[in-house]
Length: 370
Image (cartoon, rainbow, N blue to C red; front, side, top):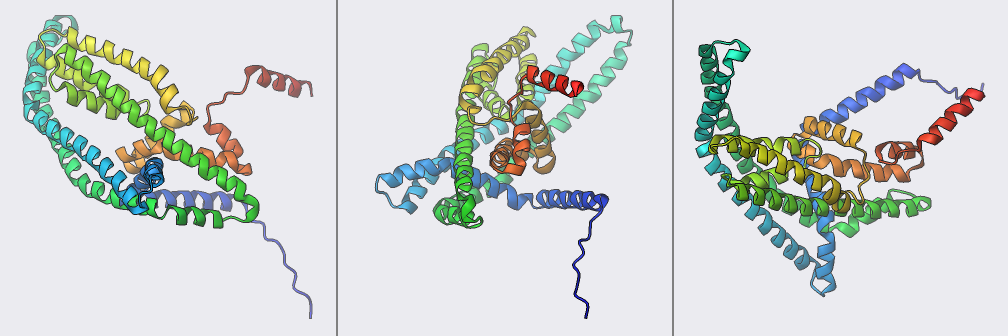
């Protein structure tokens, strides 16, 4: 009887790449369709990591672990619900006065365009018809959008009620989960696993705490500026601007449009809108050059290119929640890549460390000489 020979079967490259693409497509589809389950869990894990030092503080005061977790959760939930209640009440009032804003804004726009109608060679009647149509669309569309926001906030209460339960479970079973992570790997890799877990906790805690501090500072600065200018709903607009500012590189641009529109609709002079633009720009400079580098980005070293890409990808995958979650998730991915040898080039690619230009030039010169 002839011995069996194990011949290695080489899989063609096109089959490998096809399998990889199908796997990626299926994984992304699963993440999208299961977002109602996955998003609250991801939020809960990140918030549990953020609140864990506070729980440990109460435990060091000789308070039972369960009671320590409950104290932290009750304090956090009270603060969060107070913020949600304020924003909800202000948005309800804002939706009632939105038609007045639209009427004043379109009247101002009508005067501005008609005054320039001679220069752009368009009949005033055509402009009037277009403004009338646009005004009706603004009243219908934006009232619908505001109503959807209010309904969305109301429907999100179920998720907000569920997240504290998840956070409690993750905090209570933290030792079990950490032990499980260590047992997934053999003894030779325990040092690297411990480093990844420690750095992941550090990155998430610094980033989320920095975001909270940054949001509070920006909300205070924006609200104070709008109050000084006498803009209606100054605190609401300041809080919304601060929340939008949490969306990297995109939110800050969107945040300035709403107060400028309110200023144009409620103030007699359009200069107030210019003042808002200038003040918001100065606040953004302070945020980008002082607050973010010192408070938020001290531990999260992600370059702007991939930050923008993952924010847009997060929006496409999970909507607004995905935009908020994209940066901390990418930071965790980078920590893992930095400690796994085959993935270290990817960790370098995600980071913000630029190689010296002179080094690149000398390398190119050596290759040419070779």
